[in-house]
Image 1 (cartoon, rainbow, N blue to C red):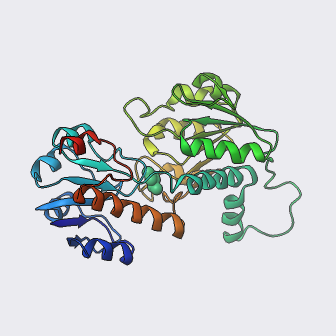
Image 2 (image 1 turned 30 degrees about the vertical axis):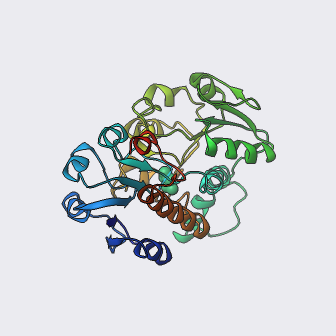
Length: 319
Ligand code: DGY
């Protein structure tokens, strides 16, 4: 049985697959292009994919041998799950192990925006540090400010706990979220009242461009906007226009639309925007755990036991 692995990963996890299966590994840090992906997947029964691999119905139709797609991520907007379900392919993910790590990174971006860590670093590197400035890089502490969390799943909840411990007032907006400890507001009200807005929704048709021009316009002029979820939840064109108009005190983006963000993109021109390359889950421990879970998912599906995280277990029941 062949397993396709679409990127270079921890050798110990590849070895666990090799003990049981034939492994075709895409031996690069850059993704295969669509043709290379098709080639890699040919005759595979399992695929360990990344969020940059588009697995749509065409790809699934071209590879009827596939029985499991194991995505190295909690998000799965790169996979057409209903199509996989109807074709009998199990789709698995790696949640939980990255919850705290991702929430910590959102907090890091909140602090960065509040205290201009990256902006200060950029300025020092650019040779602008001539003296001690009493009136430059004046930030705003986070204690006593209101954090609005959009999407109250595992990561949003973890961030809420950390932010509360820092003395932030936390409000959330999630029609489906169980937020007993926090005020759950309609999105418009959250946007109007929060000093910091942090996005934690999955990317779905209903959250795509959730923060459009109108909703960004509802935010306080000096609010901070943080996104560690998925880039397309924010309308990038509207965000650039808002920044050009002087709106928002700072923006921290670990995810962008498009991604990667081209070097010439207007977002890079704003001193008050910090951009990181989708690294919120990037600690050694978390990425190791994600790889382990992704491999566990494949082994379990193909050995007929219960995978740790399957999005469409009905496929396994059918089997
Ligand atoms: C995910 O898991 O969906 C993140 O975006 C990468 O860790």
